[in-house]
Length: 351
Image (cartoon, rainbow, N blue to C red):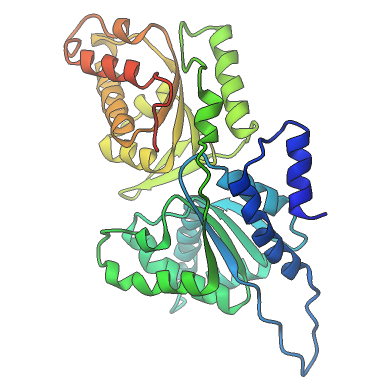
């Protein structure tokens, strides 16, 4: 069954809304799927067929890129791994660290060979390069994968030329961009509709007090945005790991304690804001002198989310204006309360 038929069946069932921009890219995904399904003829004098070009699908947040990736990965008949790009690069770093401990001269080679032995297709979500170490590794890694015939399909919010924009030593990264343009079809998803915002439009995003009703409402939002996914995300910030308990397709979910009860700072929250388009933050307590350090971290977290225009969905013991009534910092918290109110507005969030 072609992806177009599968897509239209989902539309007919009410699971999706028909979108011409999404439909336009389905034949491109089917091209890759069909080519991968062709049997690879083996023999002494048979040359392995040239792998199909992959796909770099980019466009604004909430346009359906991740949904299309899910549809593709679920219907590919060869070994294919669907993974968030950030998570994949973390795994690569860890594997290279282990490889170096064995004394190899080039740690990328065994790591690339391990990936190549497991898959014929890698389906990445949200390719972005913000780290100098990733920038230096990714070019050589992908070169090895392409040489082995691994097909890459990826989504991104940026056109390839904007990857690692203004990054340190970016000129060393430019050959990787050229490689992407050569090996992947570059396709902009131009849908005018932000489906993620549409799902939240008109719905409350701040639930108080924290009780069974609020917990059920938060769970319903998570189910709606992610289908109840069970993945998590570990961010690496200055050599430390910051664990996000639940993460799927740019939607993060954590408790107040996870993010503000730990010794985290602005750098950690900025890295979270770079990776998440939506944060579901649960169990925000009332704040004051008794939890002053946690309150300071919460202010820093909200500032990072606000500046990055990350959509916030939260459960809290009180409305924003009543969260912090007494103690040092209560006056300064008025700005945070104002931002929390503004972030509840319909349509607020990253474009």
